[in-house]
Image (cartoon, rainbow, N blue to C red; front, side, top):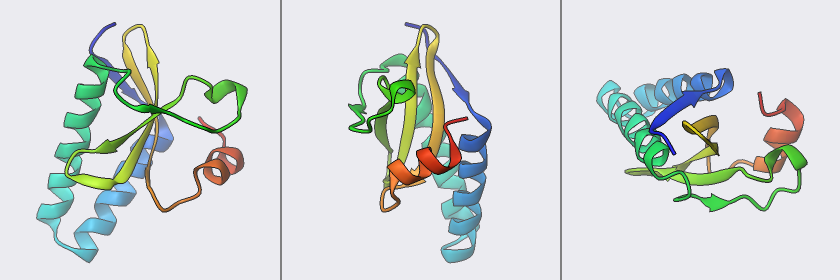
Amino acid sequence: MGNRYLLRPKADRDLDDQADYLADAASPEVAHRFLVAAHETFALLANQPRMGWRSKLRHPQLSQMRIFRVSRFERILILYLPNAEGIEVLRVVHGSRNLQAILSREGIE
């Protein structure tokens, strides 16, 4: 395994949306801490891609998908796929959201 991570476009938008929300609801400093924590967690997962737990979603394309919490922002979940180079981040979503609906409605790309 490698140590690289790739953010899919929806995951990148998810990060921006969450940071914007945190900047408004808390402060720009909290938003910045979130972005740093997210990228640190991506790097950790890229080095240890099997750390996350397997998804229980029943979708052939998502059979290898794993889920892990953003460090210090435990309510935010990273949905990712391990690969030969590290990980591919599919989405970054709040844990209260219906993951099956998000992935079914919007697709994984």
